[in-house]
Each structure stands twice: as C-alpha cells, then as structure tokens.
Length: 293
Image (cartoon, rainbow, N blue to C red):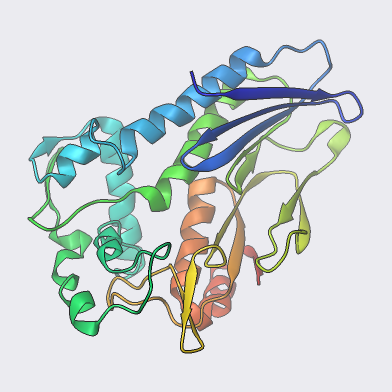
C-alpha cells in the first residue's frame, strides 16, 4: 500500500490526508470535530485515485491504454468510452487544439533533457500521426493507426478529482476539499459559512502570488512555469500546438480558472493556454472567473 499521511489540527478543526498519485502531491481536507474518524473515507479516495492512475497511465504496460497504443483493436468499457467521448468533444470544440493524440510530439520535445531545438523536419515528420479525427472508432471499439498514440494526461487528474469528490459527497457529512497537484474542488462552504482558501502558485517564487477564497466548485491551473527551455533568448513552454508541433507562442506563465467541476475548469484553462497571447480574450468570451500571470 502506498504511503498515506494523516494529520488533525485542533486550532482549525481540519482533518488532513496526504498521498502521492499521478506524479502529484494529493491532499484531502475535511472540516469536522476531533472525534470524527475519516480514515475509511481517505482510504476510498486514495484507492480511487490510484485506480484511475493505474488504468489510464501511459507509463504502464499492463492496462488498456497500453494495448490501445500498441495498435490493437480494443473494446472499451463504459468509463474509458466516456472519457474518449469527452476527449472527442474537446477536440471538436477547440478546432483541433485540444488533442489527446499530440503526445507523440514528446519524441522531439522532452523539456527535461532538451539541449537544442528540434529541427523543423523532425517536428513535421510527426504531424501526420496527430489528429483525433484519425482514430478509428466503431461503437465501443477503438483502433489507432500505426505511429499514433493516446495520452489522457491532459484530463486524467481533473477527472480523478471529480470522481473522488463524488465518493466523498455521497458519504462525508462535513465540508471537504480535494486538491490533486493544484487542481482542487470543494463540497461547499466551510462550517459557519466560511470560505476555503487556496494560494495560486507564483511561477517565479516560493510564496503564492494570490490567495483565492472559494465556497463552491473547482479551480485548476495550467502553465509553463515548471516546464520550459530558453534558446537564443526565446522561451519555449511545454504546451504544444498540435497543428504546428511547436510550443504555443507567447502564452501566459499560468492560468487559473474557476468552474463547477475540475474537468470543466481544466479544459478551459488548457484551451486558454493554447490561445497564447489571446488567452485573456478567450476567457473573457467564456464568461468565467480566471486569474492570469
């Protein structure tokens, strides 16, 4: 069993649970009396997060996604079918900018090891293997053309937050907050109608650049602060345009969006990043609450 840490603060009446999943620190906070015992709830949430990670991680060779990426014709269960339907909707709504087949670009854009810019030829050679419209889907079956692959990382963590939120919402009688790597969702206001408070990470410093108060819904952040390279004075972030194969030009350092669910907020923040310098205009047109850095 992976490590889970528990803590209770009498000063704030907050029970906290921390664990690792999806390469992120995960936190569940419940505001409840000291004699409340949330361990069973924490176990359900952590196991659900690990289940989703195991099922949809592209780093494993023992799940359905691996078989799909090996170009097998696979039958999809209802959960995977639902996620891929959502991915298709994202692809169509974004005019192809949100594309879960664009992970193939990692072959030339590895921001942890990149020593020089890839050549235009090497990038262009990968473009024929990108495009969700090329995925062969018939009913509940899927098959990828040779050279293509799926990566659900762009929606997986937000999906996990919402699924874990549903588990707690059904069983927890007290206010709670779920935070997976900065993507968070709350059950509602704290006791005595207090708001939850969360800091927005400062891309250039340790202290948060702002503190958000939230009483309902979800918040997600997308950005390039942690993964980028600079060559000849030009900064290249890790968010790539699947149509060109190159990093989005002049995006904000980070975008935080509030919405009713994590998967909705995550979609909006990612789509906004893909708009580059037009991110603010895009978000204003959506009529959502957001913060840019």
